[in-house]
Length: 233
Ligand code: CTP
Ligand code: CA
Image 1 (cartoon, rainbow, N blue to C red):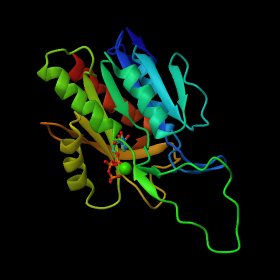
Image 2 (spheres, rainbow, N blue to C red):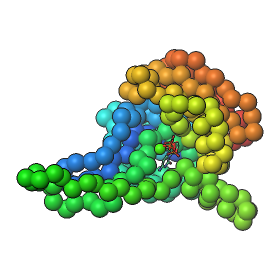
Image 3 (spheres, rainbow, N blue to C red):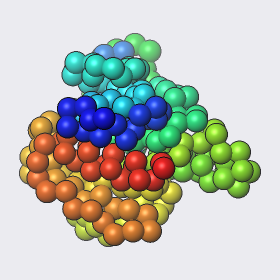
């Protein structure tokens, strides 16, 4: 059976997708954020639903309409995204980390709005956030060692935005994070962020990279699902 021109090759599969960009509070009214619109993650969610998957979309600060047929969990910070992704991914067939996750957060969150004073402002000290993708990879490694299987996601997909040495940085990142696929975008000069089209190279652990030409984010999503479906079965 085919739905909207797509195979139902993810029927009954439990898939978790993160989308958007996390925000880290400085005080009650201000945050550190990034330019991710969530368009690629939402395209992944729509296409996965169309291919029959049971989708949980963990959406960080997006303004897009909920994709029909997906369960949407809204989050703001990296800590919230981590909670939601780890909870949904226990026993999932695949997890795709399309969200732009803040690498750092303010070391302390001020309880009151920071006021202008006569002198120069205090610097904002930053601290490192946990790496959720690397954590998923480690959980899976641990589950395989213990042959416990069910608590770790089956297939793990990361995204990477790079401005320089795109492929070399991407290959190193794929290995470091222990994922199966890494979708590498070149960013800068108006590429990728907030636009409906994208071009990418999908790096494959133990395989040849797949080039996806410039086109709708749904097309890139379908290439990801082709590769994921082959790894699930
Ligand atoms: N990621 C994550 N947790 C973080 C940072 C990133 O899960 N704290 C995930 C992203 O969702 C993405 C992948 O890791 O799928 C790669 O993100 P990227 O920012 O390119 O990699 P980093 O390891 O953060 O390296 P850098 O920003 O220094 O290039
Ligand atoms: Ca990063």
